[in-house]
Image (cartoon, rainbow, N blue to C red; front, side, top):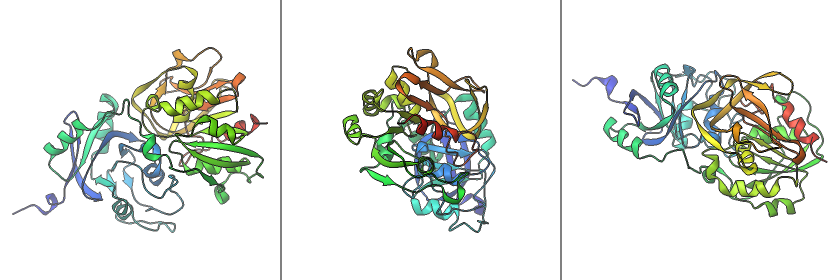
Amino acid sequence: MTDPTKQDRAWLVLADGTTFEGRPFGARGVTTGEAVFTTPMTGYQEVLTDPSFAGQLVTMTAPEIGNVGVNREDTEAVGDAPRVAGFVVRDLSPVASSYRATESLDAYLARHGVVGIADVDTRRLTRHLRDGGSQNGALGTTSPEDLLRRARSAPDMNGLDLVKAVTPRERYGWTEGRGDWATAPARPARHHVVVYDYGIKRNILRCLVDVGCTLAVVPAQTPASDVLAMKPDGVFLSNGPGDPAAVTYAIDSIKALVGKTPLFGICLGHQLLALALGARTYKLKFGHRGANQPVKDLATGRIEITTQNHGFCVDLATLPPGAQSTHVHLNDGTSEGLSVPSLRAFSVQYHPEAAAGPHDSLYLFERFVQSMP
């Protein structure tokens, strides 16, 4: 007699052959991507909808996921859809217990065609990725042998431009602030800012509005000449997915903007600014992903607990003269910020908008508006 508990099974198979068995949820099917882990205790909806996670099979290290369901307010992608390639959890809550919930996590992923797997030993998986490094994997309900073939044939993250998959096709405006969630009242609009959308999060746009910016958001491929023709008071370089060195069109645009307008970059925007200045980037072993990452401000000595989501990093040894390292990660000493005062340009590797996460770094949006005329 067939064991009923084995009739609805799924597997996550890594490219090195390591296999994890579990129970499918969300959409049924097969998906591939880079297997990574992220450590926040809350905010799984923000993780799901962060475009920086495009192309990745995301493992939540927090064991209980889905307990507050999904709502309309916490989506971070400018569109409604989740951006992850697949989702891996330990315990999937059968109940969405929150007055804000509009549907369950299972139903939400199914509606958007995202494959998930539950009942996975995520502690074992996280240790494996931490020790061996992030690697490609395949997730689905076909055989482990088929999933292994798919994992090994999936494209490598090195050299992969994923910005084209998440950047908008057309320019758009944005006027929404954080409203009741803000820590201070929004200011009247005084600064005209052009935002490069490489896969931006909504809360970054909200934070810029709150400090008095009128926003024009443009696709990643927009030439610098078009941006300068808009006569901005400043230009913002957003977060996004993939290998920064592969986004050559963005690097070329930033080269043409440096020194002509104040620049502020976050995450991928930090890496692209560094590349435009002549520095290099490299892939981290397993990246920094979570809402509890410690960063030191080298100017003040202040320690910030930050939200992060990146797998690539700026090589500090390659920063050109005039570019200063401003922040470092306290776990491994890697780059978390740079500044070029003579060019009115600065950037950070982490996410000061903190959705979800701590609010230690919101001051950076104020620093940006202070750099504008």
